[in-house]
Image (tube, rainbow, N blue to C red; front, side, top):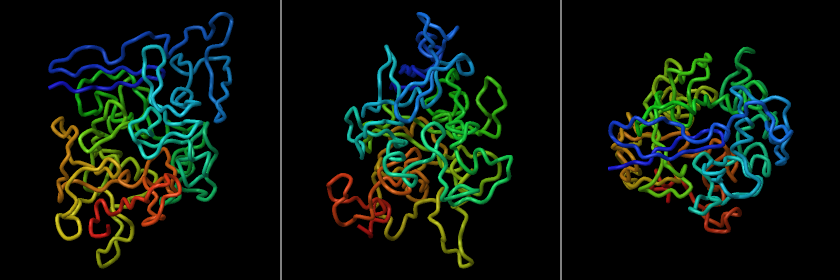
Length: 366
């Protein structure tokens, strides 16, 4: 059986076939798609930054490692298309100036798995993470991340806001686009799932940080997700101790937003919706049997056999932060995946009956 393996590089994305004993390099293509040797072509500056209006601002020097642009400059697009072609390369877009399609429907403008920063600018702070070069800080939460706790000054660039030059996309992602592991399950050798490595362990090494998020990524970044075609996210029951030692995507979120999974009252009742907690195999949850990419769940100890799993393992699969939220942004407040506030009426965003995503797990609530 062959699996599609996806490698992302600023300005270039390669899809290669993952075969047993594969030994090819991870990144292929022209170096000049991403790098500039002298930042000059036909007497014109090559390096640039991208304003949130879509305007390119030329830079007198290249970025580190001679890159032409930064994360936002590469993964933005003026139109609604969410995968763009640069030469022979495919690039996923997370910030569209023109509104993309939501929820994902498989069209060329279909919102990708992590959501889109478009609605952060169009609808306001509750609709996305505030990230440098896209938005300023969210002043509703001075001094700490929403749901988190005040942090020391040394940690402020990441733990209070991502909207600073010291933080930005790198507050969550630690890109290692030349990592050359060949496992279908993306771990350290592959640069970690979506490059979600521990920023606390970023030391300038050419190797990815020793701790990070593990998972399996759909070749189209879930532009056309189905129950039988989707990302696979790793989860791990808490408690957490060190930086991302579990490989859980929820532990990455908890770095800023607190340990929601452990917060209960004295009588062991949840006082916040849990994450990295197993979905019960009883009561109202017994009707939850088929994976729904609109409401993804985490899987423990992800292996290649978990690729595109369709059946939920109640009692083992885990509720995740991303079960309810799109980390880049969505049309709904709190970056929610669906407009449950309009349920059971009409969703003003889609003009269709509102979706109550809560009922996908809590089936008695439908």
